[in-house]
Image (cartoon, rainbow, N blue to C red; front, top):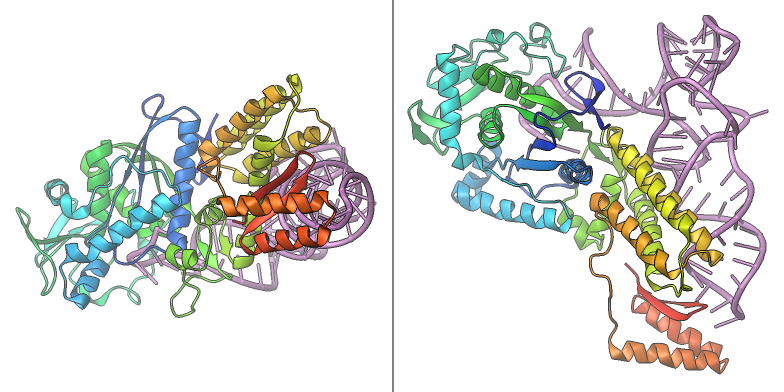
Length: 464
RNA sequence: GGCGCGGUACCCAAGCGGCUAAGGGAGAGGUCUGCAAAACCUCGAUUCGUCGGUUCGAGUCCGACCCGCGCCUCCA
């Protein structure tokens, strides 16, 4: 049984899909006004973990992730550079796709862009006007939250008690109620504008998601994800719009990822603790180490990014990689040990059970490490045989369907001159010329190649 | 003011009423090794922010308090 913490109910619930075996998943995607930072990627990697786990558990997943390519920030950015909105967002859209590939985030099935779904938004807004949930005011259209009594159910906010006045955007004074939100914004100087049957203007942010999610997934979704900061007002507004329009429960399970902080503080450019993926790659960070770091803390817990914590995650992942290397290269005796099968089965069962419990990654990783320890233990006693190798590797590959942290290509090669050096050192060792042997080892270490002398002879690996 | 989250070993982090408090990192000792590395073995919380309470029994439930943080406004 799979359980998830549902923000809507505030409790852990058994996961049941609308259609057996199929999951309709919507995740809030990037607003393409800048390069995404590692906090954004924490959310996307959480969603990737969720999706990979659902696939691992045997579900078919249809995943939609929107791209917000028109909003205040993208418009401002384009205007500052004096280029078109499309020209401006294209760079960041491309960067986003590069980044998710780098981080091994599985692509969504559809990436709808706001600017390509204006007609869907117009249709919805028109419907909301007809049903009386929305009203025109000075050329803009607003959603009236008092017409939707369930408003506040997700964020556990009582609209009556919202702190009014002080922090309300001054230029939106024309709304009937301060907490009503814009569905359609009237044209402004220097802003893109669509001519529609609603009149000229551009869509509000919230309607983009409601229109695009239901366009591809239908009026009801199984899971909708995002960062905690989207709970209010964004997701609350999506519920209001979608349920008012379709008259059906919009989303069964709302899953929200907590924030990534840096050095215990919220990331900000002024504090200098703001990192994009590119920043870290430039510092030599292995993106998969970053993936593992972002993955290895439960998604509902605040995660503190520090370089020390990243190093710990890297070392932890290295233990898994070392084990994999050992299993692939160790010389084993013929035969098999039946015990290995039961260890593998238990490990996979524990792994699955951990993740089934609201994606308890700590528990799942503990299962992986216990498996490694058990096998290492037997390896040391020669209690692993040739036929067990594939069983163990398969188990690791099963884990990796969800984690996606193992090296992609199996065999790396070294240039012939390096191989010659290694052979030269072997010769020196046989001749007990340890000074030369150590000098060569150090020389190769400087080149990023570590030599280890094992019972089966020398072996090498690259420093990651 | 309202809503909510967290405080478990040197660090990260599970556990949420009951066997000896998972797992990872770092550290110490040992086996192996020419040495190193890797691997393996062993050792690290009588204790889970504090103080009360409930219970045969509490990190685990209840209350108060102390810290740290988030949201209520664009934000993953």
